[in-house]
Amino acid sequence: MSTSVFLAILVTSLATFSSRFLGAISSQGIKETSKLFKWFNCLAYSTLASINSKNNYISSRCFV
Amino acid sequence: MINKEFFFKGFKSILAPDSPALALGCCFIAIGALLKNLGFNIQESIFSTMLTYALPGSLVMAESLLVGASLLNIFLAVWFVNARLYPMAVSLFPLMMHKSQPKWKYYFSCHFIAVSAWLIMKSNYKSIDKKHRIDFWIGIGCATWTTAVIGTFIGFYASDYLDKNMMMGLAILNPIYFLCMMVGAMKTIQITAAVILGLVLGPIFYFLSPEWSILLGGLVGGTIAYFIGELNVN
Image (cartoon, rainbow over all chains, first blue to last red; front, side, top):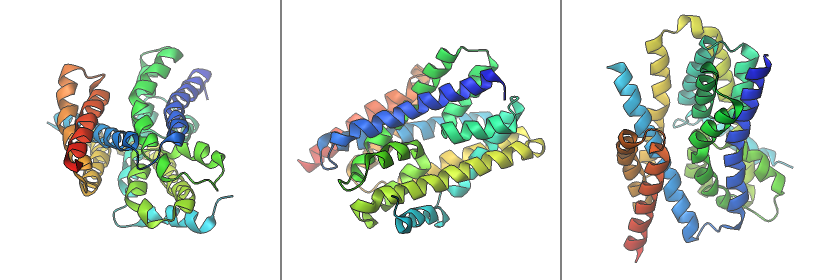
């Protein structure tokens, strides 16, 4: 495994894990009945829908 | 330690009829083939899926390497692309928090946060006692993560038999599947509004700013959906 690819994979995993880990840490004080939780829930669903429609739009253009 | 009964219950959930395993596997087959075409060897491809376990991040890393980007640039690009994982984590972990469970389980299992596992957990958590939800989640995460690794392995060795159209067909299966799962999750006015607004705003923001479209679509759509839900309750 070449060093540059190895380091790139490590950096990528670090960048990805940081979002997950920060989410796990900061969610500790949030109750599932709170307004903040509801807002984050809406953000998560909306972001995923946004990714999906963008990906589907780009893919459909590639097929044409 | 991990409760085996709930771990295997979670692990087996990918065998359910509405499981994302097939779509997820197909998508990682495409990634495995793509990584091979970009010059990765089998160890690098598997290592990438195991450690990153996020499709967009792997793609950005591979493309960045191709154009000779620095490690800092790769870090920032991947961090922006995978920032979506933050709200996903914040909207999932409070559902699984229990005083009797050790913290390491939560820190360890946050690696499994991905659209597939997240949607399975969101649609099943109510049927699991809160104390054991984290074990159930680890089971789901291990199952989807294993599927991704196996998919990458198959894709790497099948890449010679996959042309561009087949790879795109495999790659598009996942977003279409997730779209169906999200439509199935539209059970409250807040989630319904969040999904519809995200679907509409994503491509609109893509025309204005391709780099920020996902985050802007999520933030604006999610915030409007939240207020719609609050107004409806009031």
